[in-house]
Length: 194
Image (tube, rainbow, N blue to C red; front, side, top):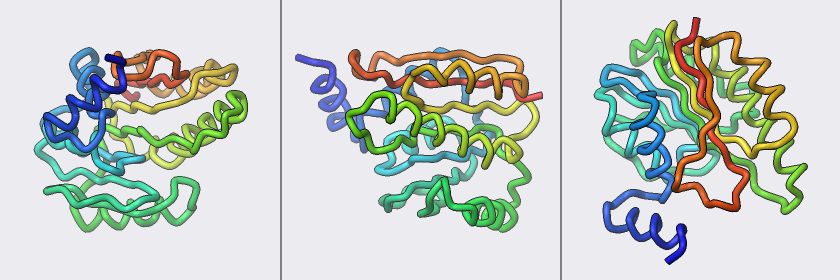
């Protein structure tokens, strides 16, 4: 049985919306990214596999963003929007104000560009996406806050790390077992914002 079948089958059995849920479970067990009292901002949420896991780890409302619609979940505030759209920051701020959220303790991004088959192009576009997530949300992150982003690894990955790691006390590249072995998909973790 290949990896896809194993995690797909487990997701169906455990009623998770996607196999991606197991990636976040593994990262959380290793690195303790989400706290029980954390406000979490999530990008690339649909169909909600990660959102379900986030809800298991925090008691606070979760703000989730995706281009595509997402079936509602309890205690999740969903924004249908584009990370590259300048108005998204204002929408997030409005939700923060109306829900008494001063800052987010954790920002997670499982967002990814549609793949083209050209690995250099896909890497560059995923790098740009991660840049936009950081620019949009690093100022919304509280002191000691954590960020986790998916990226297709490539020659710009080290530059991305060098640019943003100075804002944090810890950084790490990780690849969970639920990621497909042949994929260039990695997760970049920044912890404990200054």
